[in-house]
Amino acid sequence: MPRQTDRQWTTDVALELVTALRLLETITDDSMNKDLFEDSSGSDTDTDSDNAIIHDAPLSTRLIGALADLHSERYLTERQDINKTTEIVNLLLGSWKVNRPEIFRDYLRITPAAFDKLLDGVKDDPIFSNNSDTAEQLPVQHQLAIALYRFGHYGNGASVRLTALLFGVGYGTVPKSTNRVILALCRDRFRRSAIRWPEDGSEAKEAAKAWVERQDRSCPQWRDGWVMVDGTLVPLYARPAHFGNSWFDRKSNYSLNVQIINTPDLRIVDYGVGLPGSQHDASAWKKTRIPREHETLLPNDEWCWADSAYPIQKYLVAPYKKPEKDEGRNPEFNYALSGIRIRSEHAVGYLKGRFPSLKGLRLRIDNKDHQLFATLWVVACMVEGRRIMAEDRRGNEAPDEDDADMDSIMKADARDIELLEAQIKREKLKKALFDFYEQQRDAEEDENSDGV
Image 1 (cartoon, rainbow, N blue to C red):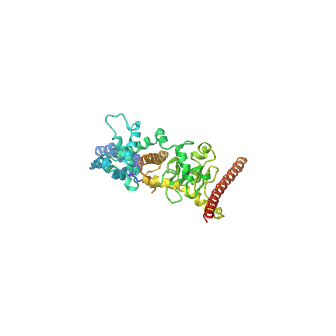
Image 2 (cartoon, one colour; image 1 turned 120 degrees about the vertical axis):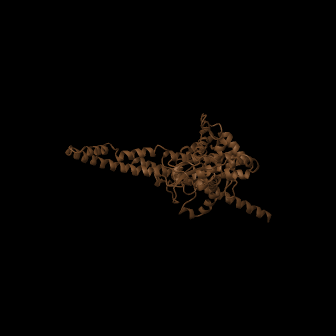
Image 3 (tube, rainbow, N blue to C red; image 1 turned 90 degrees about the vertical axis):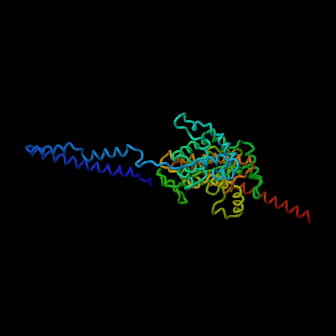
């Protein structure tokens, strides 16, 4: 619950007193007027005394004047300067960046080369120019460093106060710099250059298919399942005031639901962000692009791998659930599928390991604007993570891997047909896998018999 300031508490109490005093003064004035009318022949001294009382300002008026004085000043007490230094940020963007890149990365969760690349991409964004001679912004690299530091830390370590003291800036400069960087990273041009769906026949898509095919417990017929999806929760540090109960998740936290679609090399190619944590992955999945555009995104009978929380469809293959999962060779099928799908969890782990702010987001969600900002924070981390990964790979640095009317009847029938088609497809994939295993065993037996 938001804390009430001393000024607001004083104002509320004073306004209640003013209301009560006004009522009391009205009653008193009526009584005094009556007495004066009945005793109009009093002495001059009494008349002077009564006139003094009448012309004296009422207490309620004086109290209102005191309230006006209270709100005429922004601060109730004298402001005291806080001794700050820019020594750390100067070392960080100077000596440490050049000579101690490991320290630079500890602070900003990014290599110096990736930082420079990211800076080149955002420095010309109009958000960093305000055309003011009296309110000049911090250098863009300082603002970017502040935002990266907050993305890369969570809990008290990412608080506005500690960040401001570390970088030697004012408390208000920290959220302003963070907001500008987030907006720059989430511009359509910049975001789409980082997170985009691989085109049909592209090198990235073929590499993903080849990875699936060469896994130990996979088979060539599985290569068209080249993307995987998983959901993850981004905890919030406080209960949102904006429909708070809807943010309460199955882990007893208030959180955001995030859907991540990635290729086996952990590259995020699509996402869904913004729904409350109480939303099931199966519901959140429907808000992503694939369910709406699967014929375009996954042509030629391609599909996406998922865990058992997702509903199976022709373009979405998930493991068997109980009671089917214990029947026949279904456990073996589930095991083989999980060996591929696990890369979606690795992608989530990489993202949260690189940007720990997603392990506990210190943002309040009290209205729709706050909800939008929290969503953009997550998107900015994904965009930045995708660019960092590309830069790290150019530098040969492996990423960290530290997720009932007729209309309703027709819809139900359509879902039954779709479910049947999905089940048939899953059975075909299972049969293809086990046929491949049999062929391998037969080939090994033939080799052994020839050797004998």
